Image (cartoon, rainbow, N blue to C red; front, side, top):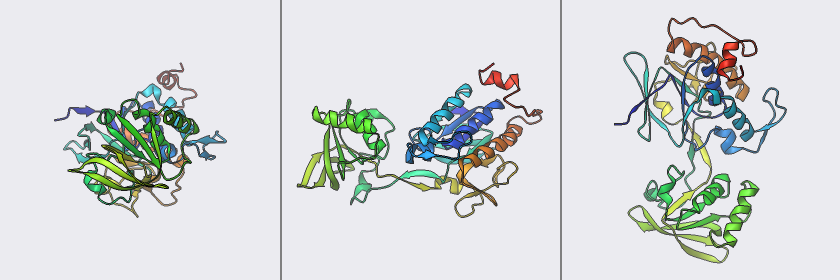
Length: 341
């Protein structure tokens, strides 16, 4: 049995709105654990357009998705939030005292008073490449994310893709893998130029193999790969492979949230506009995942929703306690929490 992790609030989703919720909740002394299926904070901003400029964040004429994430992470440092990446919430159970037990696909269990869904359009799910029979290898030798690097130590690793994730893991796994091969359909990449340059430098040193082409077929038995056939300009070539990481992008799905007994509206979660609470008391939804009349899918809207949600969450976690509204500009108490006084 997993040891129970106790906290005030579990936030499902570590995108910009989930991160800002940590700040608002922290001002009211509410402790947060965040669960996200991705391997880093930032959600869609960091994963899909880390270098794409955003122009509608107040006081920031232009900011990239990654810069916004970095600034939000810096802003919430005083509240010491706990992150659980590469996880999906698989179960939510209400307890007799109206609290919740939240479980993940890694077997972790969280006891909390409040659940905040800040999952954007839903959980990001990896796209399965169109390779015949790949399902038989998934979870054994084909993986869509790296949860434990040790699983790739002394393995013949093939990484397929041309984005940041593909290049990052090529560089990170190269020192521990027996061999590493990067396969992309063209010699140009969508990744950070520095990462691309480092990969090509490793290829020149004979430490990384790079193939321009597409995966044609998989070879192996019992779910364990032995080699992969890559179709390139010079024909088919079989490459030794015991672990494969395809990075073909992500799709958005509501996932297990759909089974939480919430009254859904076109695959979104309806909320009230006073507290942003769902049809289930103690469960809130903020950001792009929610719906209400007049809803605008903007990051700044999610920030506003996080502030109002916090007032209601505090009343649940600390019933009977008088809630005093304060401004960070004038409250020495809040400034002390933020470490600026």
